Image (cartoon, rainbow, N blue to C red; front, top):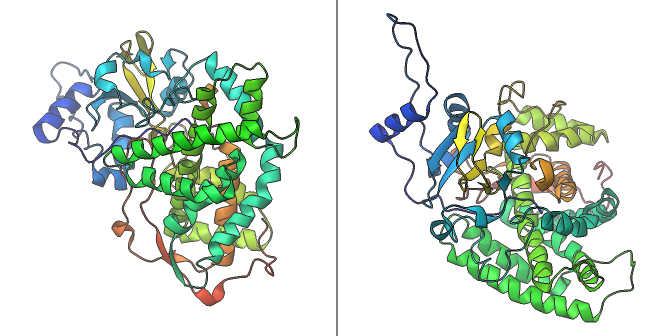
Length: 471
């Protein structure tokens, strides 16, 4: 759903350190001429280490350094691919909408070197390359138009009761225990079941998708083989599901038609959607449609627990039936510690200049959404969490033609999850110190491996009798 799902392991050799880092920082930092006879200004501190496990826990100081000293910065990624990191808001917004930066990996100047390193493991061998994350107009325009009808405000509003039902059912599963891992037991299954429903995956098959998606998350920062195996299983299943649904299509115009049936109908009525395209579209919506929401719920809950004043403010508003702070609060959580750290790969189709740096044709460009959304040139007090923030044109869901197609669904799921958690488990707290939490490795996504919490099990409100939740 979101143009954001490729992973690169982060446990491989980190960026240069020591003398190498200082030399690199001096090369990358902008020159500062000074008058003859005066002392040269102090050199900036060396570039912080990037893509280490320590960096993953809190990347924001390193991104602040890059914004100030090297806002468009060429680095070698853990995978060995050289890429430009774009960290300032203005440059990021420009890059996300720049037609000279293609989403198609064929424009990568190091296609042989980068093969398998700049996309989803296994998507090429499974014939799943033709999806919204890898194509440009006019194909991107055609395919996006076919899928966008599933994410209209009316369709999402009609889906809200199902999301609330899933939310309450999941909380019912652990509410009387007084403890849970909110990632494994709540943030992860909620969007999996929701997107499966929307796509039309039968209920009896949805646990299989949960298992495959779980393997993708578990292996996101490690060996890519686990992800590739899951991709292959998904591809085999989707090919069979498409065949079955083609044989039993509902009547044209059925109000409850699922998205896969809609893609098949479009293919059968002259929209030139091949079976591979239909499978690739279903796959990417499943793949991209769950992990962003896992991280939105996980990161959002974590930050509310770390900011008790903001959490109490939201709880008071919910108790009064006021959802306005919930609406602005979701946007602020997306800005402050969003689920997508870097936008997915782009490749220069010609030489261009970005942020004063010359980008050569074929060079990969990665827009660092997490850095842009804390740019003090754009956001007042950017390192402060303010759920009531109004001027909040964050880039958490991208910008331009690749803006997140599933943003309305993700917002709905995030609002339902956070409001219901805070209402039913009002005294929820972290079960471990923040420094004990571990963040999943990976280049594109930002999310916790686990989020252990505790609460007074006697304090849970039964959703059947509780009237305080506005959702």
